[in-house]
Length: 142
Image 1: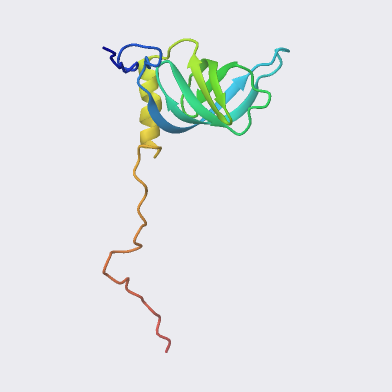
Image 2: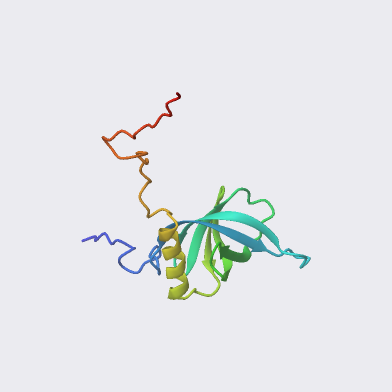
């Protein structure tokens, strides 16, 4: 008898170690070339993050090595990264050292409070009160 096994639930090859959180945060990628000159900085858009890694998109991957630092705007931490995959402009990385839970929660909470992915779309402001006309005052000239 043949049994089909879901590898994600059985601890197989495709199981994720950490829970991932979708975020929509601006970040920076800092890379140092072989010449050890000043770090090259480029912006990125963080897509998701976990204790062990993240994915983000960049405008261009030209000249980007496989190891760099990732920072998130508004968070004072640099995370050392090793690239796992690169698919067009999307990059997936594994952190060289797992980040702690407090830093992860700080990034996710900041995304929630600044209106990232988890926030509801903004409603149009009705201007005044619905169903009530704004009084118009006109100066009468005499």
